[in-house]
Length: 210
Image 1 (tube, one colour):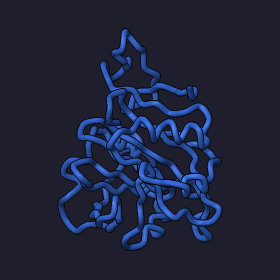
Image 2 (tube, rainbow, N blue to C red):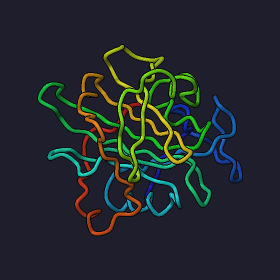
Image 3 (cartoon, one colour):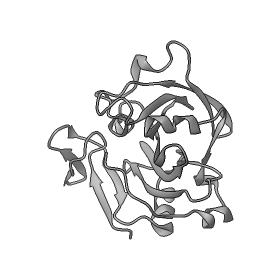
Image 4 (cartoon, rainbow, N blue to C red):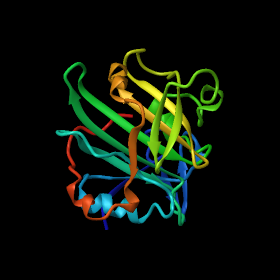
């Protein structure tokens, strides 16, 4: 069994397991966010097995030099309430870059935590006004809107959100200037359907601080 950290999906606090009910001292009963202590192929395969029918997205194919720095899932049911991956790399213009992708059911709050948004969902911020970008997720084009973060400096990160197959899809890019890497129809692959290509996935890099 892979060693895990068990946290609140809405904040950085650890949760207390009381006979199968997980309690956050700040948010009360919550589904647990489970993240491996050490990233690697075995831990990643364990998360994939426990997502059920829900997707776990990665930018794919990954650019040379980019690695998977963190990942996890929320919930202990047959299907994950939320999943996330964080990949890291560099660009000539931005230096170190971090991209977090969250797919979640409504009201989970993991995407908002990663984005520094003081609500559990993007709400009216996604779906109104001109959209920012399209990405391809699960084989179809998904429109995403810019979402203002409530935490950090304006240039610290860029946040995008939209709906994909009845779930919220969040992209959080640090720094904000690196959002230019999200070219039209940027491809997000659901790794739960990967075969031999899964063995090519690289793991390393600084883990996110959110």
